[in-house]
Length: 498
Image 1 (cartoon, rainbow, N blue to C red):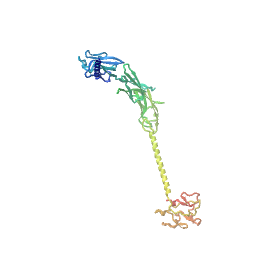
Image 2 (tube, rainbow, N blue to C red):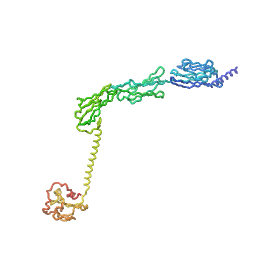
Image 3 (cartoon, helix red, strand yellow):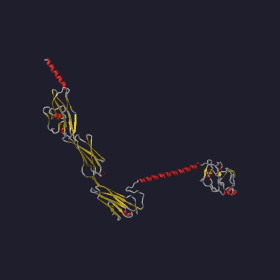
Image 4 (cartoon, one colour):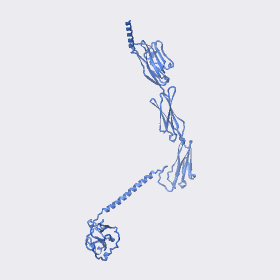
């Protein structure tokens, strides 16, 4: 009895060992897009010696419940159950033979649907090893439908400047959901909304909001949808209608009397274009010599003061009417204002700055010249001999605190200019006169040529009429051409200044 139990345990162990070499090979995950085809692999690796395959069953697991998809039986053949019968087949034709080979039971899904997403089991029933199985997770993606549209075919800019949705970008029925971004130069804002559908897809919607204006007209707006690494873009160009933007040109600020061929032009930026232009003169009527052609006023003949005034241009399109104004003034003579609609102040400021700089440089130059002359005069030194004696002009003596007026030096008094030494005053040779110089003076003119002579203090002498002819009434102040010395005496500048 004990021997029979031992033999049975040994046979069971051998059976387990033989079954341990059997396995079912499958992919862990598979995916595909809606409407595409996907392959679910299932291969049985048999043992040695091989076991007998009795049946292969594919099952769908959803919410913890199992649903048969396809069955392959060596005796009964192949069976695909609804609702997969039209879309699921075994890949290998040998499975469908009368004597089938069931080692490879890979199935093919065609026209993949969102409802196909689930976990699938491939189960092998063998003898005597029993059942062997494995699983694969199938994910089904749904490529979204992306579109971009304008909110309205025509966007109108209103004076209220209220925000409005100008474009909408939609990524519908995507799985997983898309990401929407906007690319534009417009200064607006975007809103986003996600809606989950019953089939598991998600619809993403984004609106672009902006204040319509003349600046937003013809601006490009691009919606960029990113889905699983793919970029899908769509663009529109905004068509914004707005009232005319009006300005009057061709007045250059330089309309002077008798100038010829002047005109005013009314320019208007509008969408749709301006259909009506109307000119008028504020507080008056247009001059009689004006000719109106489209949006331009032509003034025939010479300019007169009658052309002065405030001119108004009304421009009208289907959205509204706007006005442009210009003040025309007439001058008697031309001015230096630049031609053009706008008069810039920058040239005047630049000219003033340049004029100020030139004036400053000129002023500094004059000051430098005066300073140079002044210093030059001060650098000149006395080239004669200082004497301790008082200088007397005519018969008057130099007293402390007083000085007689110096008579004019005779014009024929000359000094040699050959050398500096010769420019020194001659030494006194005797009372009442100078030492004889190299030049010859006649007797009568010799005394007249002497600008001054010196005597010792306290010395008195008589002077003849010729000497008295140089006498002048003393003045209380020092003459302009005299220089006081440290010893109380004064010396003529004409003597010791070069």
